[in-house]
Each structure stands twice: as structure tokens, then as C-alpha cells.
Image (cartoon, rainbow, N blue to C red; front, side):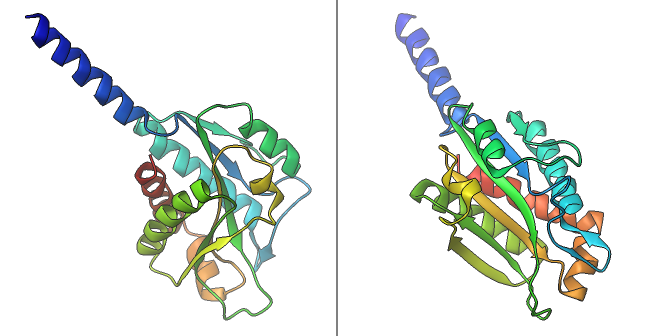
Length: 196
């Protein structure tokens, strides 16, 4: 009986450890906001799209009982340091900054994910693989984003996800749609979960 109880306790501890994984909280950072509009093309605002996708990611993570902290929930301005400081309040967390891209060359399209550390690179790779599969756009790969303050000022593993180019008219029309935002969110969430 004692051996049976010991085995059961070990099983419960292992299951809890596996579920907890390498992080317990996801910090979601919808980029830009307030006076910082981010990119804006064809009447589509990056700051607005970032928040829409972040809300969808939050809902999907919470449905899986994963705690989420949002750096912003409305159209307000936060400095890069403020965003990093929010993340740095939490132990065992990961930081995911959500963005949409733009370029003067309007033929460029696709999704890409940036990282600034080895642990961030693994998360970036997992997110990028699933994000490109769900959105069915060009996979621009993962890239070193050590120059991004929002990544290098964050103590926990951090990534910055670019969900599509709103400077490209075809991609912009897709990015502005709720169904595309949902697909992007699913890709991000699956990548986050794979990184546990």
C-alpha cells in the first residue's frame, strides 16, 4: 500500500512538473499603442492589429489554463522599458511581443520572428514554424533581434513576432480580417505550448 501511494505521489508530482514546464506565465506585449501608432498602410493600423491578435492569443492560452499577463489592454502608450519592466516582475515567464510589419518595398510579404537569447531562439523557432503553417504566407524565418530594446531589456526568454506585412496590399487585406488574426494567434499559441 505504501509503495502504491508512493508511486501515485511520484506520478502526480511528475505530471505537475510536466504541465508546469519551463515557464508558468506568458507575458503578451501588443506592440505600439497610444501616440506610437506603429506602421499604418491603407487605413490599417499596426497598433490596432497587434492588440486584436494579442486578445486572441490570450483567450486561447487561458482556455488551456496558462496564466497570461498583458502589457496593455487598450490604445495606450508604453515605453519599451515599461514593457520590459512588466515582464521582469514575473519569475518563470516568457515574453511574446506581437507586431505587424511594413517595408517601403511593397512586394515584400511573410512572417518572421526575432529573438535575443538562446532560450528565446527556441521559442522563436517553434512559433515561426507554426505561424507560417497557419497563415500560409512566406516563411521569412527567425532572426537575431538583439538590437530590439524590448527583447534585450527583458530578463526572461523573449521573442518578437511579425505577423505579416501591412505594406503589401494583398497581405494587408488578409491581416485586417478576424479569421487571419485567429490563424496567427493559433500559430503563436501552438509555438508557445511546444516551447514548454
